[in-house]
Structure formats: C-alpha cells, structure tokens
Image (cartoon, rainbow, N blue to C red; front, side, top):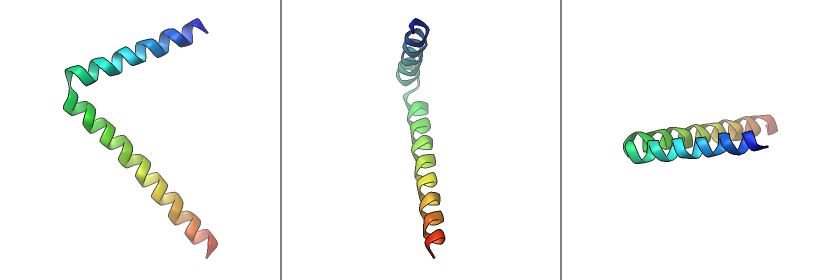
Length: 53
C-alpha cells in the first residue's frame, strides 16, 4: 500500500512540474486527451445506432 502512495505522489509531482514549466504543452496534451475521449464516445454512439437498425 505504501508503494501505491509513493507512485501516486510522484505522478502528482511530475504532472505539476510539467504544468508549471510547460503550460502550453500541458494544455495541448489535455486537449488531445479530451479529443480522444470525444472520438471514442462518438464511435460508440455510431456503433449502437447501427446495432439498433
């Protein structure tokens, strides 16, 4: 359990470091992530629509 806390803490520190040192790059990565989620949701919606037809 202690290892999990250590890894999560290191991940949080790394994310904060990237956001502080390169905010534009961090924003681009978040945008790419949300675009991927949006594309996946759209594809699932299209699949379900075709499945019902």
